[in-house]
Length: 226
Image (tube, rainbow, N blue to C red; front, side):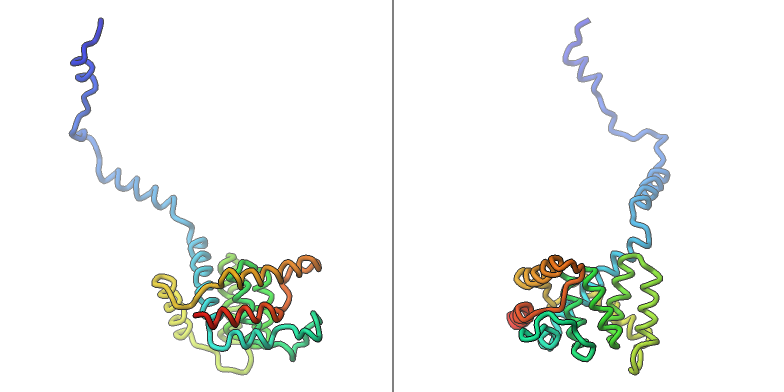
């Protein structure tokens, strides 16, 4: 039998009302369950938050007053070359700034090394960065170690109390959400870091060596162009 257009249209009729047996509550529960399944696990969410907070703190430190001057004092003396740095030569704040720059330019292993140098010399800011760094890597034991260093064991200065740290983290969350005047490294500054990293790789060293005059000069340009 040949169907007419009217028959075809009649067969294609789509009801506009929902079946009486449709359970709205059950459907909403299924949607909620599906959403819960796609949400990241708590550890993953905490790691992502720590990584974001670390980037905020690193930008603050990189843009802080005197950051370029501290890296100046850390940089190699051209007359001495790339000699091993003695402990008394190290500018602790310079090591902290350099570590933050390495973190922001995607050299996490080197950033960890320089943060550890600064923290070992008494920098609580470096210990806080290491705490966030290990949280980001979901390395809970190491993160707890550096938090303890931050709040109890470092140098001869009075450790910050929990309220201070909570305020610091609240400000970091606010800046992450609403933006900040603290700039990320420019392409020119990142190129100088990558140049140093390539020299380190050529010498079979996985850690980016101490900054040189070229990088220190570029950091000065970065801090004065704002």
